[in-house]
Every structure is written in C-alpha cells, then in structure tokens.
Image (cartoon, rainbow, N blue to C red; front, side):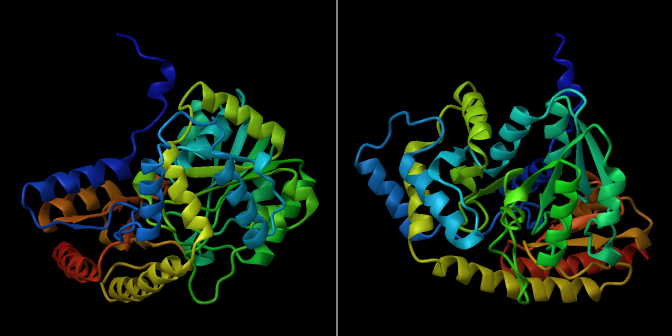
Length: 388
C-alpha cells in the first residue's frame, strides 16, 4: 500500500505518545509521576457540566451550524470585545473541534504551496506539521533562554523573505511559559504591518499568567494589525475542558467563511450539547479560573525551586501557562534518551525538547497535583545524580 506523500512529511505527536505510555504503565499498577500532558488535573467546573446536561435533557443533540451555535458565537465575540479589546462580531467567529483544529483549519484555508510561515522555536510541536500539511514551508527561528525564549524584532525581520506570508505567535507559550510584554507585542505588530504579513495568535493560555504579567492580544494594538490577525483560543486550559474539544477562531469574515467551508467537509459541527457548556463557561462566574490559577501559581514555585536545586539542570521561571522548559545540556544526554531513561528507571514521564525544536531541553507540565510534583522532583534529582 502506498500512502500519500504528505504523511511521511509529518512527525507523530511525541506528547500524545509519551502521555499514552505513562497512562498504560499506570494501568499496569506502576507508580508513574507524569509531567507529560498539558492537561489540568481539575474536574471541569460543575456549572459547565450542568449546562451541558441541561442541553442534553432539552434535546440539543442534533446537527448544528458548521460555524457553531449562534449563541456561542455571540458569547465568544462579546468575550473578545470586553476582555481582549478586539472588535469582533458573531460573524467573525468559528467554533472548532478544539483549539488545535482552529489553527489547522486556518492554515489549510490560508497557506498555499511554497508559502513561508515564521515559527519561533521552541514551538508547540504541531505548528510546523500543520504548515507542512498545507504544503507550506516552516521557517524556524531559534530563540534562547537568556531572552526568555522571545523572538527579537531583529530576528523576525531577518527571517522575512518575499515568500513569507504568516507569523505564528504563541503567548503565553507552550512549551516555555514565555509571555511577551505589551511593548514587545506592539513592536512585533509594527514589523508585521510594515512587511505586509499576517499573524495567527494562539492565545489558549491567556488566563494563566503570573507575577502581574499582562496579556495583550496582538490584534488589539491597532486597526492595521487587527485586519491581518487571526486569533485562536479554546476552553481546554482555562476551564479544564480538554476532552470537550471546543476551540474557536476570530478573523475577518472572508477567512471565517473559508474555514467554515473546510469544516463543513471535514468535521461538520462541534458537539452540539457541549457548546452549551462552553456558553456557561463564558457567561458565568470566572471564579473557577482564578482558583485553578492560584493552584498553578503554587505548583510553579515548587517545581521551579525544585529544578533550580538539582545539579546540571536549569530553566527560566515561566511567566505563564503551566510548563517549565528545563535545560539538560550539562547531563550530556539528548532529550529523547534523557526522557526514555528517566521513564524506565524512575517512572517519571517528561516530554523531550526535540519535539519542540530544542534537543537540549525537556518539558515538564505542572498541571498535576502537588504530591506528584514533589515525588517526581525527588526521582528526577535521583536520576540526574546517578548520571553524575
């Protein structure tokens, strides 16, 4: 059997593979400390579940509009107007099967053969693969821990060619926890405008910020950048709704229509009754978001201080999201070997940095309970000291 050539161009998801392996080991009764999946360990808030249950009871189980339930599209637009200063209307919104699909759908609608897409590294591992599947060319720009893994204006300018069409911005960032300051966002916006580019802003972690960091949606900087911005987001991280698979994109109407056309021939509509849970998430109290953030903040302190106390390991303190990106260079191991040996010898699951374009690092997610974090740090310390 000969498969389509595009399949061979794409790498499997290491995060999903390692998370699955850790779960399988747990199912066998092995005591695994998993830092692998970017999945909050909190249950979905009860009022969100109750809204979905009510929708089920009311018979909201039929096919819905491909672009999403009108009430949810309006709620998303209102949220973006009030919280992000983005003047979108319901017609500018598409509801997608998870935040990941909002990005994939847009890239399919926007990128053509040979188009270049600038992606700062470390990057979320699916960005380059999505570009490849659209027959575009990922242009990877390496960033460094010394600058908190932020792309500089000079780096962005140097990466631009006549074939450049799109810049991917992720703030707060997976895997590094980097957050661009408002002033840095404004500087990047000016470069994008000056070079007639577009930007897709992945804002899935916007509510997970620490130490008075501020999130600025790049589309809110000016009318000029707003017209060339696609904002992608979802409910998985802020509301612990990972399995609900509800994301969204906000963009000019022409792009939303194109994405809706693709969605109509691929996934159709998002699960109808689940969308009513998402409406409740946006329109009800946000206390649950603040409670989860407070827990993440405590966990961040513990895992960061723990890493700093382990010889040969180092990482910047994350400003957002729920990951630490740990430099393992001093151990002499590359990331895949490091993670394989760590899992086999100490039953600690981590994600190799090679998946994110940085083979000298590993990613640890602290979206897990404090007991796991403390136990996992002890095992990690034991593993590194054994290497010494």
